Image (cartoon, rainbow, N blue to C red):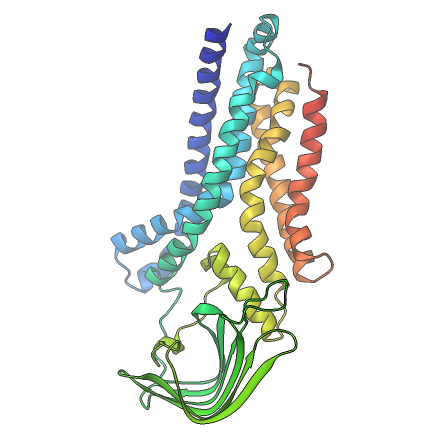
Length: 367
């Protein structure tokens, strides 16, 4: 019996992995061909080399695979289990004392691995997406030498609000710098205080970086303690950005990693902006990978019902489920961004609905 189980596990695993690989790579190739057909005139007008265009699309593959991974898990689950049902292998397994729940155990293990794979792929995808946009000329590097009234999100939790910047003069005016401190249950950690700095001007030199002039600084050591003082000149060692660096356009949410996006959310909130849309995007970076396991729970019992209907049933179920899920994700993104539902809840509603439906179907499946 144990040997038979091992053979069956290997068979189910191989079937699932084969269909998953075909779907996860096939859909991105199809979307690339469609997108290339739509934009080939633009690339020709820009005189972009063929090799550059090819590398740009290759850099964008991780993001496409990230979004298609739940659908690939669904296709692999529906077709692998459906194949077992069509060939009466599920009936034979039950006759041998192997329950349906035990039979599909390798599928859930592979779906869990796909969830982990999707999360790390989502962390890598922003780098490729940014490179793709740059190579195709969709994200131009700023050539301007003067910039007015902008906000720049720096490393270390710092946010700059600058009235004017002159790259040739290496100078700024109307500078505000904010950093949120580390707060603990007692109130705050004095080793990492928050601060709010205002300066009339700042000058950059390669040796000393930025020197702020004529301003004030407030240090926050908790809810009830702060220190404030004025200064004529102050060097900001943490402010290592060159004037040209401050002209770079901010990244889009799909070009940020999970931690980077969370930091950006806190920065926007400190500036008084609406970060609901960003919060939904951040939550989806976890929710979408977790959907791989949920979608397997949903797809496995559905495959039994139409197992004898052939491949057409599997394609119809997989496509319909994928369309419904992606539509729900887009709707919940709009609902969460609008503040109708808390962003975290909005991001998890599609997965929760499919998870509940999958649990009910799986519990009712004949074992």
